[in-house]
Image (cartoon, rainbow, N blue to C red; front, side, top):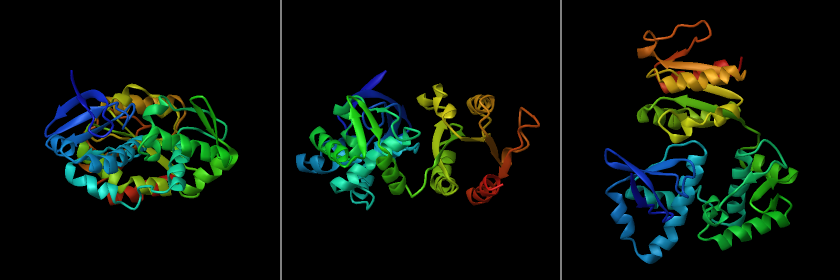
Length: 294
């Protein structure tokens, strides 16, 4: 088992090598998840000046944590860092950073008053893209003073006012949890996330990826928490079948999809599995909209 310092949170974590990339697993940038970094970029990051590291690395860590927490796959190279740091979506003010914390709590609870554990807090200041724990604590105190959240030790919960604020800053409406089951196909996963995620959100659902190779796939908890499951049978992944079957057992609606070039290759033919057959992401977007608006 290989271990290495994460270049962004400086935590020593397990890594796996895949082609030209190293996958950093379960560091503070992506608790319970992972991100990938182009191997040749690692030394370039370490060679940055002290001031550049101080200005940039905590923002990249916050970016990774937010994206992976939303179920997105993060693959980085050194050339990406400046664009991320200068992106308009990176929060700058204390108010914007506080919104990110409210949105995080919103994603992890089903309503006001439900506690969300943040532990260890000392490694979680990237939730607000903050450079240190002191700023995170300041933001927490500020949000408590504004009656937007309640903190009891490591338990955090949104007040009714905080819930409304999180809904407003998340697009003005409550999105229902949706788990998307995909096989171990990075190109396919990227296609879904780049072209279909926004459409699923527009239709009222918050999509989270559960890919069979991820460690998170060993837990079916995200499926159990979902209001909808979308299972793509392209690649005939047994893990996709298992998780989708688990959802059906809980009476959670499942929408089956499959790429057209594999539509006739099913190992399993059941009346309950009638997938939406798609050729392009744009075509699938239309089919999903028709299905969800029935």
